[in-house]
Image (cartoon, rainbow, N blue to C red; front, side, top):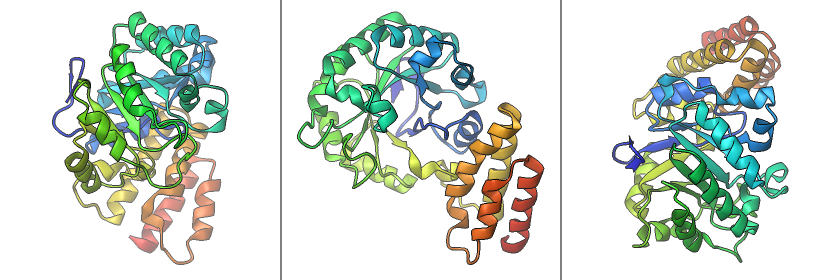
Length: 315
């Protein structure tokens, strides 16, 4: 599979862009364990144009994580175009347009999946961003606003005509949010459309490389993207089996990278989400007090000490 001049190999598996999750430390680990391509947290176009410091910081990428995409969202065409130009200067391999985020603070304001209610605006933004930058532009979206408006088969062709170089489809509608099961049948229908010539990447309810393999076989997609199943589990992209201690080592490394690359307070906050979600602590009896202590720790040494105590008890 190729996006522009980027050769992603056969059956690539991607790390989805996720707010407060896909920081640089987590991306670097996912890349190390086999992610074919990673994405930053999604970036507000308007905040980027206003030069909001915390937003601009999200554009920091490393050569170690390439190929890497930066995803932007917004509802104003001019802001999206200007943001794309700013993002291009950060040197990503791909600029991705977020037309799929379903959360109220994004979609409720007409951005993200909210664009599924204003297709002319979505296409105008896409067309103008493609024309404004030289880096490949891709799109991530959903099946439609709700089950009465499953428009993805037509929309895919329209977005392709705007000049995008790949399309990622989450197999849910906006109204579903993250509930129910992802429907891959329409993703497969888009891929089988003889008029579609850009890569189609499927997303939704993939929890392992085995499930990714099944999606490739059953739906013929060019790539598979994994989102929430990666929380606290960067090794999900590897077929290697890891011990509890090895997984704990990886999470400790994530903490160190985040503190070094961001700063101690925010590095810890970013790592907490992964410690709260990681599957390695699930099912452990009487673990709740330790979990609470992990999520309350405010200094790296304190958190590392709690993790070491956990290792002594369980490793």
